[in-house]
Image (cartoon, rainbow, N blue to C red):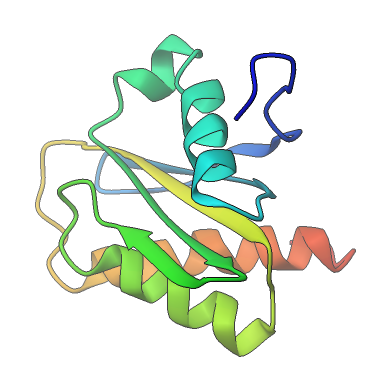
Amino acid sequence: MAKDQTAPALTMLGVILTDRGSKYAVTGAQAASREEVDAVLAELKTDRAYAKATHNTWAAVLPAGGLKADDGESGAGMVILRMMEREGLKDHVIIVTRWYGGKKLGGDRFRRVQDAVRAYLDHLNGKSA
């Protein structure tokens, strides 16, 4: 990304749910290239709380195809990517942030990621959560 360009505007819904002490937040933005995805992630992490989060899992559907990163939350990026593909959301990145609360969630962690992505998609579609 050229120095004179700014990162795409972030839509930050903040902490939208908690489960056994873990907190989940969701953020998204328009992104049509890996460089824009990286700029969005860098912008998000300028907020100290997000920079220190346990996981910033993300997925993007770009013209070149889907990208995902689990950031230590194994399998979560694929959950986000599949939901975006089913929704037909393109040229976009969605980041699900988790602050670990001290208790393992097992398979429920995927449900929490789904809940966060659904809240973001509902926000984009003008539905109340």
